[in-house]
Length: 302
Length: 271
Image (tube, rainbow over all chains, first blue to last red; front, side):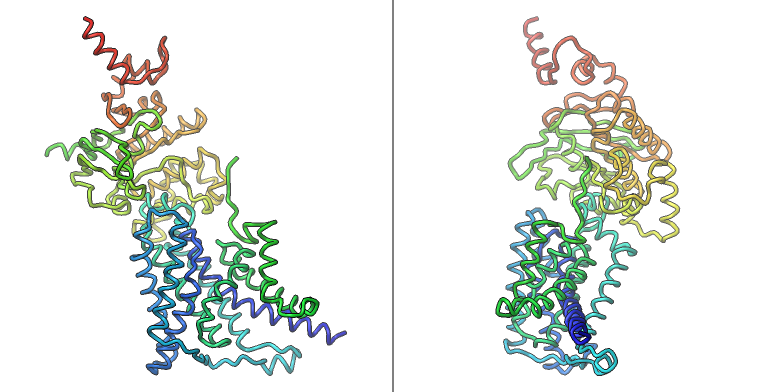
């Protein structure tokens, strides 16, 4: 009995930590959704682009880790700058649907650029953190939990705290929340939309880089990272598109539920249900709680 | 040229088009003397909001464009400016329909108005206290989410937010829309106070002709994108045609100015 409980705990903790990896990807979506009310289809491409650039700096130019990270982050700021100038500003008066389509196009451009610049082969990314159980935890708690999962959890926690502080207590954070509520009114009191957009896209780019590094270390830096974006969709539906805590909790729920279902229910379906179980969960949320757990309800006066 | 020192805003014969085809303003000229309250009156669709947006340069974000005429603010043309630059120059528009940031608290809403200014935390607190002095109601509700406040409070938030930008000139677009009469009076009292104590010049678009004129120095009446009548507030309040058409003091049914002018020219011909 004790063994079974221990096994369940292991599945649960492993799932929760794996979920933080989804949360990291979802964070980038939330940032952009808050400011432009658009689902950024290029987020997956940004993950791929940023981490491939990071690998390229490190492996092709032998730039040390920290410097490569800073360079890749700066590159994402440049991408944010170009996106604001070349994509968002010309579409300033366009509908949200148009901007949505533009993000799909932007995704293709980033994918192409990344592969043109750094090649198409799968790269191995070694962060110096192994994807194997931590011996100390295995010995003392009898749980087999990957060091990479724990790192991802910590990184996600740091990012959410940082972003929370940024939004809640800084001037530019206030500006961002104002723009998220009513861009027209924000511009009427002198909040420059282009600065806010630049900030948001750069932040989403850096978040994409961090998410890409975690996923790259686990699965290799490869084109498949682009499709990670799809895994963020159920996370966002559950957590709410406009909520940063929602992205984190949504990721945890997806991570835990898919692992538990896979282990306990999976055998009845012939296994491999973690690929689609999150989407089933997402459908239930769409039916009964479409704004997600933490999404901002549309407040209407009566 | 000597005009510039007297008039903070000088609009000369502007024409405004939306989407390059929809003519919203034909020919609007108006002046706002420094430190005065000027009312811009007219029915729905007459062009009041369009005029204000032309001044605050917010037309561009609605595919509108000033195609003829000129707008001078504080002696300089506003042609090349964008909305945040206009705010920097001291011209702030309070948009129609209040447009508060619903998920932000009342206080965050007001502070957001100071975005364009470089203020320290202490300066902001000081400014806040000053603003709360005019809007006592808001101080009590400072921690509430703006979306959950009443319509009157939201209008106050919108004006208070604009005041945080330290404007020389305020453009108020229908500040009393949908408010109960005592709130309308309260809002106008505050506007009047801001005008007198802070020296803010005000261009006020209103449908509520009576109360707007009672609180203004000068008035313009526009209809289908054209200025039909202008004069001091007092003269407009006592004008028979204004009384008949806008103040509802009439034995006949409501008409518009075009009909009145037509009638007059007909009468002239007959006589």
